[in-house]
Amino acid sequence: MRGKRIIAGAAICASWGQVASAIDLDITSTDSVKSAAATIAYGMMSYYTGNHTGDNPGNLPSPYYWWEAGSMFGTMIEYWYYTNDTSYNPTVTAAMLSQVGDNDDYMPTNQTKTEGNDDQGFWAMAAMSAAEMNYPNPPDDEPQWLALAQAVFNEMVTRWDDSTCGGGLRWQIFTFNAGYTYKNSIANGCFFNIASRLARYTGNQTYADWAEKTWDWMEGVGLISTDYKVYDGTSDTDNCTSIDHIQFSYNQGIYLFGSAVMYEFTNQSSTWQARLEGLLNSTDIFFKDGVMYEQACEPVNTVGTCDTDQQSFKAYLSRWMAATAKLVPAYHDTIMALLKTSASAAAAQCSGGTDGVTCGEHWYQSYDGLYGLGQQMSALSVVQSMLIDEAPALVTNSTGGTSQGNVNAGSKSSSSSEVITPATSGDRAGAGILTALVISGLLGGVGMMVTGS
Image (cartoon, rainbow, N blue to C red; front, side, top):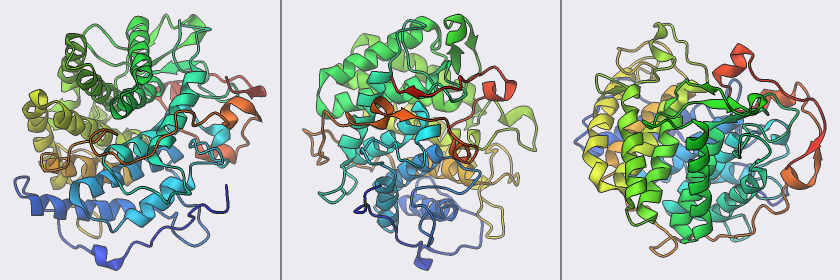
């Protein structure tokens, strides 16, 4: 990493508030929502140690993987967008820049050997949010938000793999990582989401073409069903003829917002309207009595069966539903009705811990004692979404966007130009998202040295 990188964020200040009672949320009051969001954000950022002396900026401690750090900073960019609270900006900006890597593409040397397409994608989507929300730009001698998203897009284009299954992105970048044979919805969803948003922001049709291509592949292989359910993934070991039908909320959400963006970009085409509406209707599986839940793992029992990654998934569905409501007013009321009941329930869950405001997992229950960074991020995302109506419009480069781009960014990436050796056991401590297929042993890696495709 270059010496000029910003390597230390501002410490979390005591002035951000110590709290000692359960969160009381009035979703009709801007002040109440901002106060609740501030309390939850403080709790979430207390998990971050990257601004401690000797720690690595941008990283989270175990058991949280690198991708979730990118997700967390994306959430904090949105926190600024919703609340205008700049207190965390120095920390967030420092973290976002500390992990860009030597080629300004979110492939830092501390992660490259274990990094998957989805891991890189979550950091790029955070940068894309910064561009769309006009989050303060980095110094001129640092990589810029839009260019970072473009770099990741360009690298994902080079990884599109027609050798099996008629195309698609693999979950993993390198053959020696378990999951390389898996072509999953979240890796392709990151690509689809970034491509659609770049098309909208820049007006460049090439990005839209790749969004269309990704959708067509997902639909063709069966990962998006005829009734718009998004399934987890498939393996190229059988040429993607069998599908893992497990459904996670973040998969549904990532295609929902990407489709909303494409609907707007195509001047409200009937094709994208049908896709958007179908995806929105199929979110119903993630709501129980109007309250959001992770149906694949939350209802099994009350002691908690969602893994560390899955505990944060509701954050992304919340974020992308709110963004869809902002972008496509026709679906605003339908979406916000669900987010409002979920926000109230989530705030009520934030009533545990020694501080009295720690957030639990099951929003449809009283505080369940299942706390962590993912639970805080999920609660923050849905609570601050109550401010979407008063938040500024998402900008483009023709409507006030100031982030500078680089259409050729990412061309010098290690993912396409250098030989990368397999990770050691120490390297694997920073590995990316784990799916149910890893646990069931259906995934396999090939242990060999490769160059990225």
